[in-house]
Amino acid sequence: MVWRKQLGKMKDEQERHIHHSTFIVMLRKIFNQENLLALGLCMIILLLIIMTSDSAPQWIYQGF
Image (cartoon, rainbow, N blue to C red; front, top):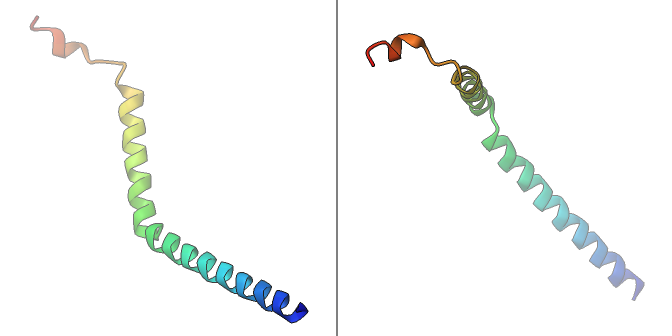
C-alpha cells in the first residue's frame, strides 16, 4: 500500500512538472525579444501622448 502512495505522488509531481514546463515554453513564445521591444515602444509612445495631451497648442485655436 505504501508503494501505491509513493507512485501516486511521483505521478502528481511529474504531471505538475510537465504543466509547469509547458507554461514556461508558452510564456517564452509570447514574451520573446521582438514582442518585448514592440511593447516597450508602444508604452513609450502612449506615455508621451498622455504626458503632452494637457498642453494644447495655441495656434490651433487662432482661427476661432
